[in-house]
Amino acid sequence: MAKFWNFVIFQLGWFACVLGAANKDVVWAVIGTLAYIAFHAWRSPSPKTEISLLFKAFAFGLVADSLIMHLGYLDFRDDWPSPFLSPLWMWVLWVLVATTINSSLTWLRGKPVLGAVLGGIAGPMSYEAGIRMGAGSWVPGGEMIGFILVGLAWAVAIPLFFYWDRANQGQTSKESVNSV
Image (cartoon, rainbow, N blue to C red; front, side, top):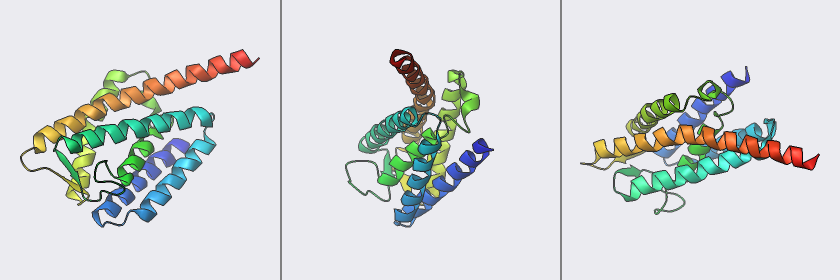
C-alpha cells in the first residue's frame, strides 16, 4: 500500500509544482512536496541512507537542468531563486523522483537497461507535458535537441539513482558490521 501512496503523492506533487510554475505561484506546491519528502525520509527504514540518495538526486537534477538551460534548449517560466540555475520547483521534483526509488519504482531494481529506457522516454515526456501546461518552453529551433538532452539526462539518472542507493545500502551495512 505504501508503494501505491508513493505513486499517488508523486503524481500530486508533480502536478502541483508544474501548475504552480505555470501560474508563477510555486510556494505552496513546494512546501507541500517538501513536507512529503521529509515524511518519506523520516519513515524510511534507513533515513540517513535515504537522505543521502535524495541529496544526490537533487545535485544531479540541478546540474542536468541548469546545463540544458544554459546550452539554450530549455527555458523555465519561473526562475526563482536564480536565473543562472534551474528553478526551485524543479529541484523539488528531482528529489520527489528519488523518493520513488525505494518505493513505487522498486520493480526496476537490478534492471538498469529498463531503467534507462524508462527514464529516457518518461523524462522528456514529463517535461513536454509540463511545457504544454505552461511551466516552461523549449527554446525555438532547439526543441528536438532539448528533448533529446533531457532524455539522455533521465536515461542516466534512473539507473544512477539505483546505483547510488545500492552503494549507500552497502555502506550502511559495512558501518553496521564495523560498529559491532
